[in-house]
Figure 1 (cartoon, rainbow, N blue to C red):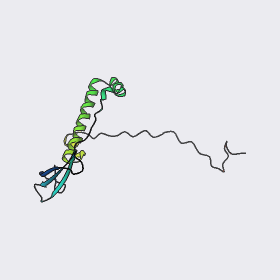
Figure 2 (cartoon, rainbow, N blue to C red; figure 1 turned 180 degrees about the vertical axis):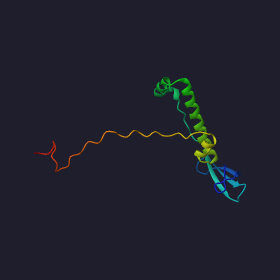
Figure 3 (cartoon, rainbow, N blue to C red; figure 1 turned 90 degrees about the horizontal axis):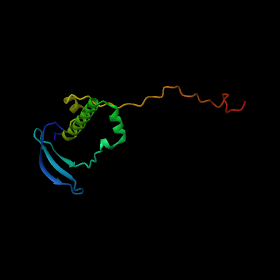
Figure 4 (cartoon, rainbow, N blue to C red; figure 1 turned 90 degrees about the vertical axis):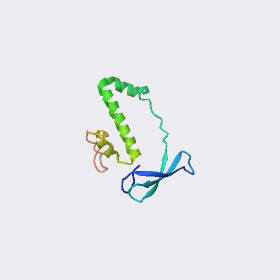
Length: 133
């Protein structure tokens, strides 16, 4: 773990279970460079992994893609997942970890905007089908 003040390495001075939650461990840490002391609350995550092969949509998507492209996508997915875990464990920003690993950040697609012009809404004083003549 790194020190939040000077970003140096820290060592654990004391480790004990949390008083309210048995799944949480409270660790007292001491920085090796500066005199700062701080507590960390560490817990295990209850993660349920999805079976990507069992989903019909994923299987259909994978069938349309060449095997080498699919293997590359799965490799990059695993690297990005590992980079995210590394960033959480070390306290470094995810962008820095991905830059160190020579990974481009995943971009999110924005939905396409509606390209046709909106229908004009007639005003109350204009003649329209709904207003009497």
